Amino acid sequence: MKERLVTAQKALENHGIRTRIVATAAEAKQLILEEIQPGQKVGVGGSRTIDSLGVVPELEAKGCKIYWHWLAETPDQVMELRRGQLTSDVFLASSNAVTEDGRLVNIDGVGNRVAAMVFGPPKVILVCGQNKLVPDLEAALDRIHNVAAPENARRLNTGTPCGVTGRCNDCDSPGRMCAVTVIIERCPSKTDLEVILVKENLGY
Ligand code: SF4
Image: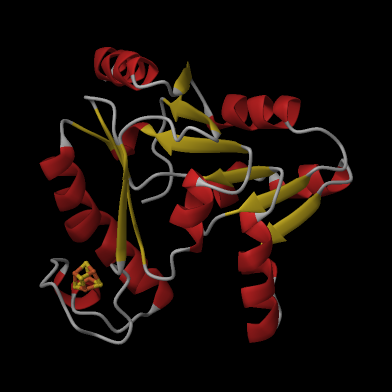
């Protein structure tokens, strides 16, 4: 796994995406806390990975303003926080899959997460556990549809077929999570995009 992570790191760096490898989620959290300054506006995408780091309460304690719709109490707040992510100083999220040839593959139902990854916040940090690593784009899409989506479907109770069968059937369900696919092939030109690869399994 270590060699595969280094291969992905080199490929991402060749594509203009600064990439670091750390051993633990705790180290990833520490890097985030070092990079984000007190008072900055921090957007957080819907991400089990970022949630699992436990970094958000510490950013709040530093005086950062957090835009994370998972903290919303009303539907109006959900939308307000999603929009706030697009104009944050720093955006935190994960990718659904990282290819060994240097691509970041993401599928979203609403689109706020993938939008903020590529334009809006001047700085974006994506934390990706080793379980997100795949050989290529085909494997990435397979992983997202047949591993990540079924897990999320069960967690969010979306009512989509993948939550029952564990496999994608390209559904037309109202709860479909796969509305937008964004493949980051090179660093977006107006975004300081950084990836932290973690030698632990994180998120789905
Ligand atoms: S298209 Fe539908 S069935 Fe397939 S992974 Fe997405 S939500 Fe699940």
